[in-house]
Amino acid sequence: MRTTPIGIVMFNDEREHVYRLNSRECMEVVQRWAEIIREGVKNIDGTSPEVVTGSEVITSVRVAQKVGEELARANCRQIVLCYYVWNFPFFVWPFINTVGREKPILCLSNNSGKFPGNVGLLATDGALRQAGIRTHRIVGDMDDPETRAKVFDWVRAAQAYTVIQNEVYGMYGGHSMGMETGYFHLVPTVKTFGVTVRQVDQLWLVKKMEEVDESEVEKGLEWFESLLGDRIRYDGKILTRDSLKTQIRLYLAMKMVNEEKGFDFCGLKGQRELTEHICLGDVAEMLMNDPYDWNGPKEPTVCATEADSLAAVTMQLLKYISGGLPVLFMDVRLYHPDRDIWDFCNSGNHASWYASRSTDPKENFKKVTFHPALELYFKAGGASVEFDAAPGEITFARLGLWDDKLYMVIVLGEAVDLPPEERKALNEQTNPTWPHVHAKLHCSFEEFIRVFPCNHILGVAGNRVRPLIYLCEMAGIEPVVLGPEAEKRIPPIWERVSRS
Image 1 (cartoon, rainbow, N blue to C red):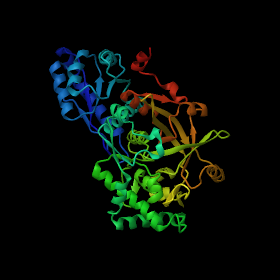
Image 2 (image 1 turned 30 degrees about the horizontal axis):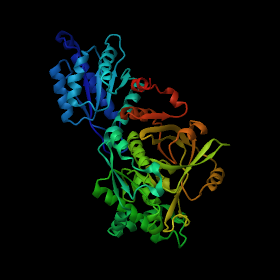
Image 3 (image 1 turned 120 degrees about the vertical axis):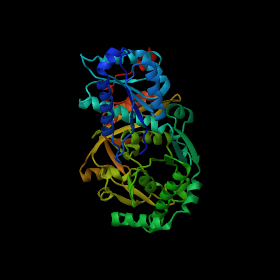
Image 4 (image 1 turned 30 degrees about the vertical axis):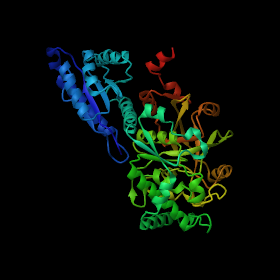
């Protein structure tokens, strides 16, 4: 998975007779934090971000400039400023002006009476904030699990923010059925996250499907048939071996065009051109988002149904926040007030990983069925993918716009485990041939309905609320946190001052 380098430096005293006493210990702190981050921020594929340490503790203007140049040459895209002893605060300017101001900055200090690192932090970071530079602060012992967890969450957020800045979103066919909340709102998105878009007509995919290696299509079909058996509900009309092969061909074509065009993530319009004349996109979208196919493990490639662009950007951020997990795309479909449960379902790209949350596709596909697509909506045919998400914690999120300004709604919840007959009865109320997440949200129905921006919601396994908040604060957008988790958030100073 793509990562960006992290730079770590330490500030110290200008007085030689002082810094000679503690410089070695200060450097050991920097190197230890670097190792803690390397080991603690492991991605799903086993990789971790490169961590670059300054060659010297900063004790003068010239050293600040030298170390800044080192980190700039190493292309460090986020900076951790360590504080362990009292330092001369103005050193931060020759350093930060050399390495670059437009980066996420974490000020990280011990909490010690003997070594007043937090005094140096407040003095130095206060100077940065006076000049309008957004920063984050973490104070605590490096052996404290909660301190480490905060640092890891900050790094995850910084990685998501800095990696996506140089990415390109491939939008196949434009936003579907006139859903304006799914349009790629170019200016606010580029200004906030740097990511841009390339729109390609779906005809390009159709023509590329003609170039696909048919032996790969056969391998894909054999893989599905071996995993699913009679749970591929061939009906001889809508779902046939040929229509399923067409869906596999679409997946392979998207992979090819993504590679050729340099798309880091994508969205597929589907309706109505593909769904009425070529095939339904569900199988292709599922495969793109899954961490495997018939050729073995792979990195999930975010693909948003109906080319919902703000959904795709949200999904890409959730992927990086989680270290590379598959991300769910769902419709906000039906609320059951008697159970306080949402049914999030749509004909679309629920990664099969969520059926059992296993890296082994055999475990997940035990719970998956391919049904004939609904002819009413999807005349070209193919398979709809059906399963119920396995129980477990999920962080739900969605970027939205208010008066052309981005914000993100964040709510913690979980997919709940229900008895089979109850699940079946609930699914019958919407569509039993589609994938479902029976979700319990940590907020009320009224709070959710009043603030959620649109009909599509995204989710990733685990509690990712804190790193998402860090991410929003880095990007300068409002995190709209729902439920009791909102009470834990302390709004940063730039939000408080701008509101006053």
